[in-house]
Length: 239
Image (tube, rainbow, N blue to C red; front, side, top):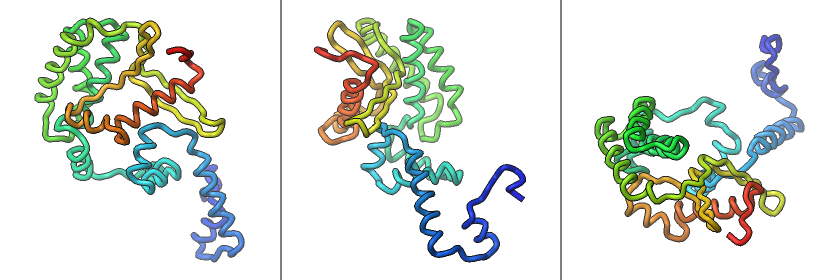
């Protein structure tokens, strides 16, 4: 008996188990109450959720509002994940971005040089190796990551702004009723300039296309610009 273990099924579920029919007038009320509760669980909109909504309204509604996939414990099989990764990501796969994000964060938090940064990258790779689901294997990803970091330290790190906030979570409310949120990889404070940095590991060709007005990277940049201006965490006046 679930009731003895602190789990209380709704009256309609109980009647369904007992093969009884719910009262017509009550069924609609139960459905609406359940829907309203699910909607109330959705507190704020991130740019990734916004992109998901634009790509597929139903996927957003089922997963992010009703939270049916998580509640039901549904996950795609390995083959489905492979197809998704190969379709939407570079040959490195999405996990390569995790290696790079963790390494870049450590570089600025701990003021690392190249050698230590390579160690952090290798450690991240070893911890996430089971998430590698693309054709490019761990050895190839390691070579690619090391080459990337060498280029970053040669042409970017030395002259980059060092007054930064990392993995900064921001939230704001638009027009007093529309909550939005985001986690920004890096925010640079360069005199009167506030610069938002988001690390991307895909191809430059794809990045150029996605930065065109209306595409995902363009939308992300615009979204973060609104978020940081509307957030109470920073004074952006005149910047």
